[in-house]
Length: 107
Image 1 (cartoon, helix red, strand yellow):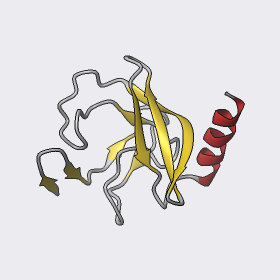
Image 2: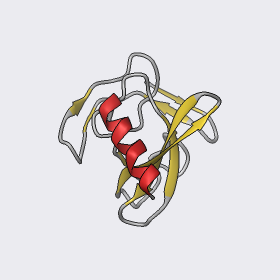
Image 3: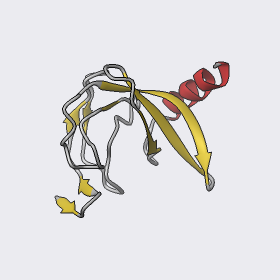
Image 4: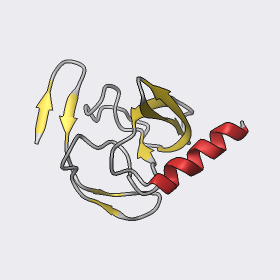
């Protein structure tokens, strides 16, 4: 299913994570933009869901922030260095979130 607007295209697609190689099913609660197992993503969008970015680098979860009581994952592209923030999903691995939290606290 694709819902489009000028700056946001909602996509709910299954995929195989390029980092941990696990199969990620479509989300039943929201639109997924990262792997719930290792939290990695791909640098494929200029605006969310548009798939127009040419980089296609792997984006690694580098830090966690909190906004309005919700967790935000800070991703960094391993190819071009761009940083991007994404909401953590309810079904994200708690262990992976804790590891990212510890990593960001050490920086």
